[in-house]
Image (cartoon, rainbow, N blue to C red; front, side):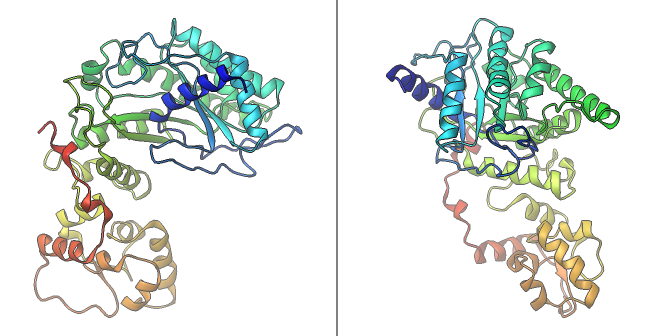
Length: 419
């Protein structure tokens, strides 16, 4: 590798580390033509460095030149940083070289926008097309969608990429206008809607014509920056819920803002990234997608912020004690899932195990539930009759006293910045 190419790699890999939406789950692309790589058979292993980079993928920008001046972005045009740009051939060479050396298992390719959206998107498409057709590369490819690119380029990109994503940037339109007045959420919705429509159309065609090509087989995702603007947790999750419903997204990623400038509109340099808040948002997202919770049950005008000392599921249960205790021997699967300390795997085990007899507390412990939390919300075969009504603050105190959460030691200065 030449010194110049190595320098470009250092600059553009470092600039890409702020993008967290690089999950590769969901792809089923197979190597059926004696090509190189396989996004399905061997699977993609994800390893994240301390600053959030996924090191199993070659995660780079095509360029960090950009015509926009978004205050939260390290690649904004007014920022005095080293600039670089790969050629199409250089990205292809790096991907193939690293893959053959077993350094990576796929490519995550994003870019700043130079000249205009089509000019940038056309180069991204040339790279993935060259990898697929000329080098017969069947490894995983995650490609960023450039807002404002033509539908023809999006269509061509979708035929070669496994997943496409486009960053929402800020959770609300008001937050985006505050820090990036040249951008809008409408510019994001158009390509998301177009790609969703294309996926559905080709899936319908495949039912009739089996040779219909795959189109973005791992679906779409988006990413929000958290903590740069003063949105509440309710506003963030309501926005995520809207995008899940309207565009059938596979994932919404929440990226805690890392202060990178002295802009008075944002947290000052040295402020800790809101990692605990980021974790609570992911837990809420999980409850919405896999536990059957409606976002309005977890966050609403009466409770616009997530608790930092307890997880969102426990917080909901303490606010709704009238729905507990749940009898695990008779309750339906939906209510068992809502018991704090009971995950999807444990809930399935409970439903299966109770077919053979009424479950007792010692049996529930062996099923892998978190007894420290669950015992306050369940009734089983050997439960003792409670003579007094449970009190939320007492239950919370007992759970926190008995737990050893690592997050309790993390300072929460980010949450009070805009208070």
